[in-house]
Image (cartoon, rainbow, N blue to C red; front, top):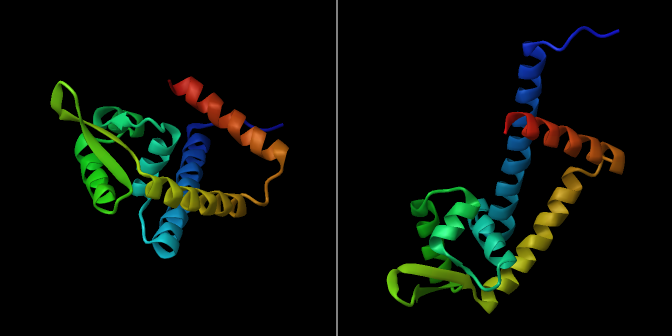
Length: 147
Protein backbone atom coordinates (compact mmCIF):
# COMPACT_ATOMS: atom_id res chain seq x y z
CA UNK A 1 0.00 0.00 0.00
CA UNK A 2 1.34 3.42 -0.99
CA UNK A 3 1.75 6.30 1.40
CA UNK A 4 -0.48 9.34 1.25
CA UNK A 5 0.32 11.88 -1.44
CA UNK A 6 2.55 14.61 -0.08
CA UNK A 7 3.19 18.17 -1.15
CA UNK A 8 6.60 16.98 -2.41
CA UNK A 9 4.84 14.47 -4.70
CA UNK A 10 2.69 17.26 -6.10
CA UNK A 11 5.72 19.49 -6.56
CA UNK A 12 7.48 16.67 -8.44
CA UNK A 13 4.41 16.30 -10.68
CA UNK A 14 4.39 20.03 -11.39
CA UNK A 15 8.08 19.96 -12.35
CA UNK A 16 7.52 17.04 -14.74
CA UNK A 17 4.49 18.75 -16.31
CA UNK A 18 6.42 21.97 -16.77
CA UNK A 19 9.53 20.28 -18.18
CA UNK A 20 7.47 18.21 -20.61
CA UNK A 21 5.44 21.19 -21.82
CA UNK A 22 8.62 23.24 -22.28
CA UNK A 23 10.37 20.45 -24.19
CA UNK A 24 7.43 20.01 -26.56
CA UNK A 25 7.02 23.78 -27.01
CA UNK A 26 10.75 24.33 -27.60
CA UNK A 27 10.76 21.55 -30.18
CA UNK A 28 7.83 23.14 -31.98
CA UNK A 29 9.49 26.55 -31.89
CA UNK A 30 12.68 25.15 -33.41
CA UNK A 31 10.84 23.20 -36.12
CA UNK A 32 8.70 26.22 -37.08
CA UNK A 33 11.85 28.34 -37.25
CA UNK A 34 13.91 25.93 -39.32
CA UNK A 35 11.20 24.46 -41.59
CA UNK A 36 9.09 27.57 -42.16
CA UNK A 37 11.13 30.55 -40.93
CA UNK A 38 8.35 31.55 -38.58
CA UNK A 39 7.60 31.68 -34.87
CA UNK A 40 5.14 30.00 -32.54
CA UNK A 41 3.37 33.31 -31.74
CA UNK A 42 2.82 33.89 -35.49
CA UNK A 43 1.51 30.33 -35.79
CA UNK A 44 -0.87 30.93 -32.85
CA UNK A 45 -2.26 34.13 -34.38
CA UNK A 46 -2.76 32.45 -37.74
CA UNK A 47 -4.37 29.40 -36.10
CA UNK A 48 -6.90 31.59 -34.32
CA UNK A 49 -7.71 33.46 -37.52
CA UNK A 50 -7.95 30.19 -39.44
CA UNK A 51 -10.60 29.00 -36.93
CA UNK A 52 -12.54 32.24 -37.46
CA UNK A 53 -12.67 32.76 -41.25
CA UNK A 54 -14.65 36.01 -40.91
CA UNK A 55 -11.81 37.40 -38.82
CA UNK A 56 -11.66 39.05 -35.41
CA UNK A 57 -11.23 42.45 -33.90
CA UNK A 58 -7.74 42.96 -32.54
CA UNK A 59 -9.11 43.05 -28.99
CA UNK A 60 -10.91 39.73 -29.53
CA UNK A 61 -7.75 38.20 -30.96
CA UNK A 62 -5.66 39.23 -27.97
CA UNK A 63 -8.39 38.00 -25.58
CA UNK A 64 -8.58 34.62 -27.32
CA UNK A 65 -4.80 34.22 -27.27
CA UNK A 66 -4.58 35.54 -23.70
CA UNK A 67 -1.81 38.01 -24.58
CA UNK A 68 -1.60 41.79 -24.52
CA UNK A 69 -2.83 43.97 -27.36
CA UNK A 70 0.76 45.18 -27.78
CA UNK A 71 2.06 41.67 -28.42
CA UNK A 72 -0.65 40.95 -30.96
CA UNK A 73 -0.20 44.31 -32.70
CA UNK A 74 3.44 43.59 -33.52
CA UNK A 75 2.74 40.08 -34.80
CA UNK A 76 -0.26 41.23 -36.85
CA UNK A 77 1.80 44.05 -38.34
CA UNK A 78 4.50 41.69 -39.55
CA UNK A 79 1.95 39.19 -40.89
CA UNK A 80 0.22 42.03 -42.77
CA UNK A 81 3.55 43.16 -44.26
CA UNK A 82 4.08 39.57 -45.45
CA UNK A 83 0.62 39.52 -47.08
CA UNK A 84 -0.70 36.83 -44.74
CA UNK A 85 -3.49 38.88 -43.16
CA UNK A 86 -5.53 41.98 -43.85
CA UNK A 87 -6.36 44.74 -41.38
CA UNK A 88 -9.49 46.77 -41.93
CA UNK A 89 -10.74 49.66 -39.82
CA UNK A 90 -14.20 49.07 -38.37
CA UNK A 91 -17.00 51.32 -39.57
CA UNK A 92 -17.81 53.91 -36.95
CA UNK A 93 -14.54 53.36 -35.06
CA UNK A 94 -11.40 53.95 -37.11
CA UNK A 95 -9.22 52.89 -34.18
CA UNK A 96 -10.73 49.39 -34.04
CA UNK A 97 -9.13 46.95 -36.46
CA UNK A 98 -10.63 43.79 -37.88
CA UNK A 99 -8.07 41.19 -39.03
CA UNK A 100 -8.39 38.04 -41.09
CA UNK A 101 -6.26 35.70 -43.14
CA UNK A 102 -5.70 36.39 -46.81
CA UNK A 103 -5.88 33.54 -49.29
CA UNK A 104 -2.07 33.44 -49.24
CA UNK A 105 -2.14 33.35 -45.43
CA UNK A 106 -4.73 30.59 -45.34
CA UNK A 107 -2.73 28.40 -47.74
CA UNK A 108 0.53 29.00 -45.88
CA UNK A 109 -1.07 28.31 -42.52
CA UNK A 110 -2.56 25.03 -43.78
CA UNK A 111 0.96 23.91 -44.71
CA UNK A 112 2.22 24.96 -41.25
CA UNK A 113 -0.70 23.21 -39.54
CA UNK A 114 -0.06 19.96 -41.40
CA UNK A 115 3.59 19.97 -40.31
CA UNK A 116 2.60 20.96 -36.76
CA UNK A 117 0.20 18.02 -36.57
CA UNK A 118 2.88 15.64 -37.84
CA UNK A 119 5.40 16.93 -35.28
CA UNK A 120 2.92 16.50 -32.43
CA UNK A 121 2.00 13.05 -33.71
CA UNK A 122 5.66 12.03 -33.75
CA UNK A 123 6.30 13.47 -30.30
CA UNK A 124 3.48 11.45 -28.71
CA UNK A 125 3.84 8.33 -30.88
CA UNK A 126 4.55 6.09 -27.90
CA UNK A 127 1.17 6.66 -26.28
CA UNK A 128 -1.92 4.53 -26.91
CA UNK A 129 -5.58 5.64 -26.63
CA UNK A 130 -5.90 4.63 -22.97
CA UNK A 131 -2.75 6.52 -21.98
CA UNK A 132 -3.82 9.64 -23.84
CA UNK A 133 -7.28 9.50 -22.27
CA UNK A 134 -5.78 8.99 -18.81
CA UNK A 135 -3.46 12.00 -19.17
CA UNK A 136 -6.29 14.19 -20.47
CA UNK A 137 -8.60 13.05 -17.66
CA UNK A 138 -5.90 13.80 -15.10
CA UNK A 139 -5.20 17.24 -16.54
CA UNK A 140 -8.93 18.05 -16.59
CA UNK A 141 -9.16 16.97 -12.95
CA UNK A 142 -6.25 19.26 -12.06
CA UNK A 143 -7.83 22.18 -13.92
CA UNK A 144 -11.21 21.58 -12.30
CA UNK A 145 -9.67 21.54 -8.82
CA UNK A 146 -7.76 24.74 -9.44
CA UNK A 147 -10.41 26.80 -11.22
